[in-house]
Amino acid sequence: MNKPVESPLRLTSFSHGGGCGCKIAPGVLADILKQSRGFPVPNELLVGIETSDDAAVYKLNDEQALVATTDFFMPIVDDPYDFGRIAATNAISDVYAMGGTPIMALALVAMPVNQLSVEVIGKIIQGGEAVCTEAGIPIAGGHTIDSVEPIYGLVVMGLVHPDKVKRNAGARPGDTLILGKPLGVGILSAALKKNALDAAGYRAMIDNTTKLNKPGKSLSAMAGVHALTDVTGFGLLGHSLELARGAGMTVQLDLGRIPLLPGVEELAGQGFITGASARNWAGYGHDVALPADITPVQQALLTDPQTSGGLLVACDASSADEVLALFRREGFGDAAVVGTVVEGPAQVVIKS
Image (tube, rainbow, N blue to C red; front, side, top):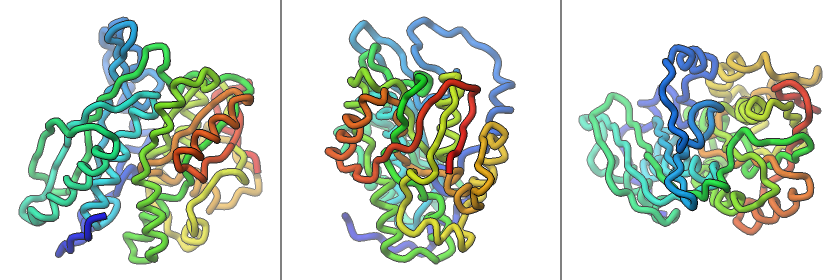
């Protein structure tokens, strides 16, 4: 990795919320979208906004569909190169979450040009370029503006066979749920902002948030995989609930099997929890059944906003070992079975 560039100002000092913790709270977002007017939907639009899926998918022909998405946010870390890498990885993830292969990106760059040096801004862009190179895609253009807060992200386009699109709405009764990455990014970022995160914690955070969700490309070809999404700003509970609502089923999560990043339970216990966690719970907690013995720390982990989080896979139980083996081959050693899908109302039930 390139040597970090010293900045006279901490990038996170500009951010009222970092990474995917910047997302508008789910309840507020739902109210906003209710005011949207209907619009004509062409038959070629295979995936739109109807189930809050990860990307739009437009059928081009019998063999190809275009996957299109965009994602951007304020700094979650102070190192500009790492910020660029995290933002780019997060944006590309939405293509993988549809089972697609990314082909091209456009950069979205908004910077306080009178406060950040050209060198620092350049390092943010270089970080994004490095991840796009790893993904095998060019940054083919973009747009820049002067802004009061640093914002960076990508528009990403990909391709997928129309018959192999993996939506967040296809889960079936009896499906096994597998999570590709451990939780806790929001908690680590909260500790970082308060200067309470050690070097090992920072490294774990960067390793997790800059790991491309490439298994999504292979998951698209597996008939036993019925639904796919990625866990980002609404936390594991929020994105599991989207999966439950899309399928009209109940998602059961096993609290004891959910993988966590090292040290996050202790940090959460010390109060390093993002404001987005509480906003998430306020937005969807009415559709979540918690066990009586759940602790505040455990609830915070379930609602913790994940920046560039893991893929959440709903697959036939007989395909679970194959899915786990794929994750292991591609370097996702923390991937784990975290629950099941059962007949019932669209809700999430937590089992302790």
